[in-house]
Length: 101
Image 1: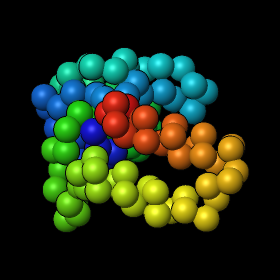
Image 2: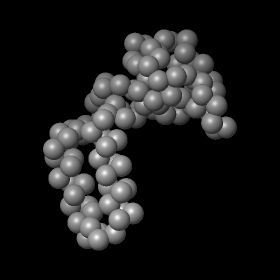
Image 3: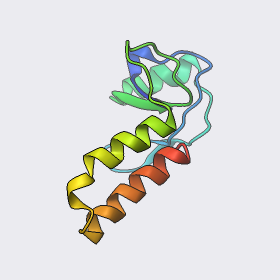
């Protein structure tokens, strides 16, 4: 999944996450296939970013493999292994990435 600006959105892309307005109201559900009309409506509603399936826009960065991400995550949390709350945060991050959410 990839977060992109609405200007990068293209017809045929699939939403990986629901799009909500500033009041938290869902405008489009996860799994919605984008059309030119829908992109225009979201732009008119001042939606600036969306999250789409895959990695359709080349932003010049390479995505880490899950194994590499897990190693980097471990490094970031290496000094707080004795803090249960932070370890729960680490595990929640890993589960989100691992499950593709």
